[in-house]
Image (cartoon, rainbow over all chains, first blue to last red; front, top):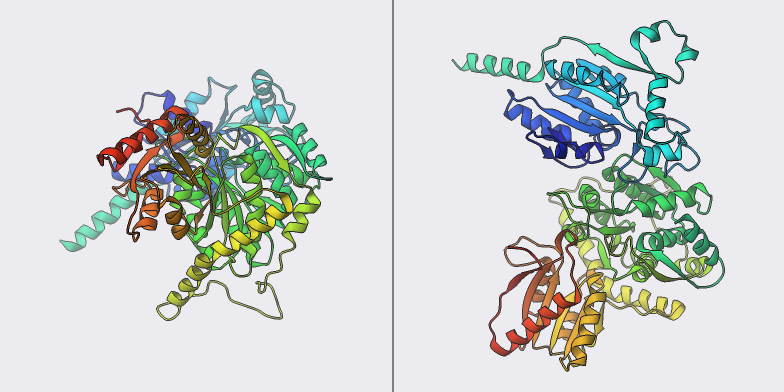
Length: 227
Length: 406
């Protein structure tokens, strides 16, 4: 398990895996090195919205583009929680942050759309409230041979919840429950009804050769020409 | 926090006033008074508060600054130097890994002679990850062409930041300048700071009028263009010149600051050095602790003294050599390990400074306080007792790791 910097990236300290806690935004390049050196290993990256889509945004799109066989579990709490609540690339427009005391002027990323568009072959979204669904999504992501991303909507009651008057952890999880809809439910809803909702569950699952497989093919081809 | 800052901000509208502020608050307040044209920043512990408090000044319309919350420190320094190249008074603030990520742009900033000013909250570098104070981050940037000024406390951080604008923008210098304070020990600890009025600070600073900028359509210029074996050397040599000359102008700015605001600054501070037999050389917050140790030893009749380096770049070689020349033994305190095989970077500079002297003190190095490890009065007194023994016997360890477990 590889992580960057932020609240999310403390996770390797709580699991009994081989872990590497790296620098801000760079968990994916470290993981890329690990995967290329030991393609037989299962490599999981835990990261956050600030870590993976701001300072490390470049690495996210390129790891997805390569369809590198990694699983990214991205904790999205819509803020830089560890440094006390500055607005991040996923803070909704108008929401408050310590650097946005009158509301955020910027538009947020839809991380799942971003990952899919960049070339990820498995993309899903879960929440901390839907705790029974999340392990299934992560399990499927790990079994996918290619770049997988599970965006997990998490709560930051200390900063995001407090500054946006959503309430404590329980209230924030209740918010998740009330604003999450499945893909199937979304199909029957109007754009107005969907305006303040987000879709959870499996959002994309494709079959494409992963980077290590393509790399092996090149090696085979190059060696054949030598013989 | 907001209340204290509001009070301080209001108070500073009139005349000089005293308020209890943390280092970060004092520096943010100085930035408000400086009122830069552009600030681009990214959060990093323990420097986050500086730009975060500053962003509330922006939101409340207390400054005219364009504030950009960029996506990394690499972008923060890029945007800041871009703004500076366009003629803006531009600032950012950072710490540790953030400064490390700016490394590429630090050199460019100096190479383009852009007077960017940046507070840096000193913090250890990874790995392992640590958020507490040591000087590894700034020492890693010591050869980047930035003027480096260290602060003992919040007052000095406030005063140094204001002076840094004048130093960086001095037509004979035009070099970026960083003002440092120790992470948490200064950045998060509250103490009384005397704040000058906005009007007085702005009068002291004046307005920035760069001679040449990009975006000047009548006099277009190229900055940072390709420079091979033909001219690169001459251009880099031209950066060395203002760094060598900067000391005299830093002292001029300090003299004017003292005349206006009453607080005296030099290239370094000497504490009971006139007749000192045993001296330590320190940077940053440890100087405050060392003064207590010196006082206690003086009361016991030990001729102890301390030299606190304020300006680390350019390094005051001749001046420091003269100040410690009469000592029997000197200990250099390094809050970072140069990993060069012979102690920390300050040790190397002090040894360089005294190298050509015929009669020189014995010098030893103490690497201490890495990752925020405490340094107390007793530990500093133990260094002085080592110095007394060394001077008497000549038996010394060149480099000692102080306060580390085996």
